[in-house]
Length: 118
Image 1 (cartoon, one colour):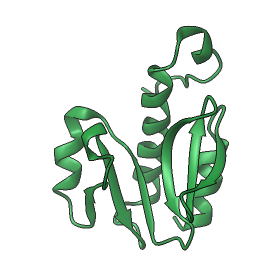
Image 2 (cartoon, rainbow, N blue to C red):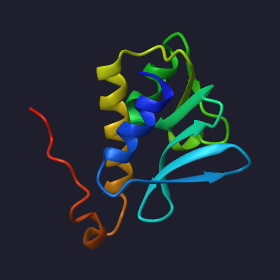
Image 3 (cartoon, helix red, strand yellow):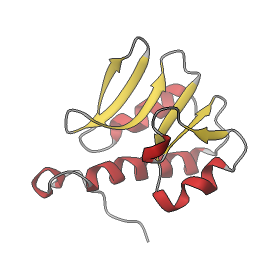
């Protein structure tokens, strides 16, 4: 996946929107301010939230590191070319979205939760 593919996929998730912050970061969020992915505007990096119990396993992989300032919240970062295949990257971005949705108030979650694949 390239940077445009990632952006298109993130925006296809329920309730997703994008903002530009901090002088050059493309922020993908839901519910107005709950971030689930960050992309450097030059396309050099991508960061997103992962499951707490899988965080250490992800950062042990080549090309994947704890995200600066966000690692304590189980965010990882990777540079282009992304060290993951397209399907795995889409799955992780979707999971990041759902992790953030699951922390929203129940009334806000309606329409944002995706069905779990078998």
